[in-house]
Image: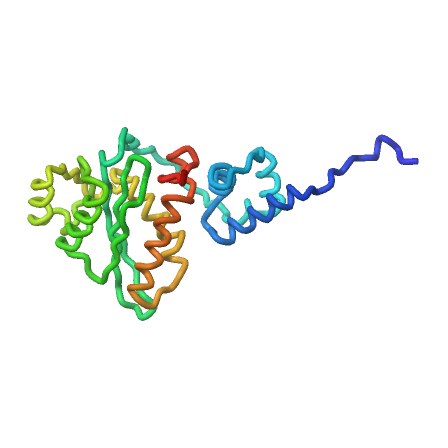
Length: 242
């Protein structure tokens, strides 16, 4: 006889729990920068699973996936005023540059363009040097298949304040919205996008050629727009696959 006071029922692992665990391990191995929120949104909105978030989080913790990234203690500061959310596509585009290097040490640049409405990535232009004329050409290519924006938000970099860029924007009837120097939070959408690029793949892999970077950027941009959950879109990707 087993005393009822010392007997405790222990639930047995089900095949469904194992399936959840397999998915979580797969997602976190392929996307080391993903936390529980992105994993759950992917399972719910992309794969269509209807598992309860408490159940998924319990298994997430049992696998110690919540201990992968140890949060640092940060000082409290005043939160900047959030950017206004556009109401439709092509209302505001945000643009910015990123810098990195190849395995041989040669410097490269990335020119990123997003639509602020659903944070959709429109282009990742890669090159050793990306002067104003190259920037204008990249924007013209986007406009050909998507249409032009009402506003382009950017910093005060030399490519954006040059006479050629200003004349091009005026000819296209596009307003340039410059952020204040030293205030990158005023261009927070593209800054957050840059961080996602940096931690998702740019700083994760060492590339030998410019072509390798360009090819990876193209494939990652498709994944970002169609498969990667985004909190700004309620856990759905910028361009959800129908």
